[in-house]
Length: 251
Image 1 (spheres, rainbow, N blue to C red):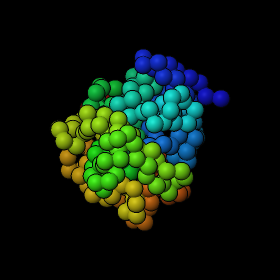
Image 2: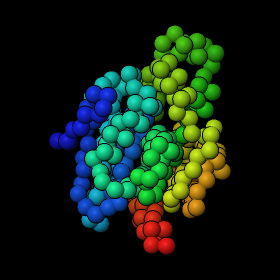
Image 3: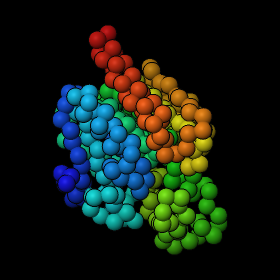
């Protein structure tokens, strides 16, 4: 059974925290995913083997946490992530998958002093605006403005997209204003990703500023990015970020 914390907003967030040395590695999952996914569990096992502190959690409306998915928005899930970070002392390495990449960037913008490094996996910054809203037909936009619209999903039942998700997301965009990432960053992206276009990864790399940023493209990898090769790449990226963060501190 997971442990639970209550956010300042009163939401109950389920989490698993593994004790170990810092900086702790924190996994931030994707839109409508949960902390029981392949990448989160793999990283927990990797962290245990390294003796590294590790945290995975479910945003509100996801997995085992409270609230309804359709009541949530990017800002709520960012607040959940900030509350989860309150479980940890010192700096952290953020590992953000898809929407979790966007949340990681919001955390880095809000509290850069807490972040030792970052790894993103098919990061999807600003997707509510640049992917969803920009891709809606006029009929879908009208339906959304009346309350919500259903989008088909390859991962199961349709996604219910609410007007609040889109409108609140506009207050959380990270690719319109300067985005400083003053720590080691590794962006990972598959070329066969049908959910996050390669252009998003290139735009993020071009837009953000920082002393140590690299983008790794994996030919043929899809959005899940969870076969054995991709999982090993994630672990290697986290290891690299931790090593570079140590080197930056010692300079």
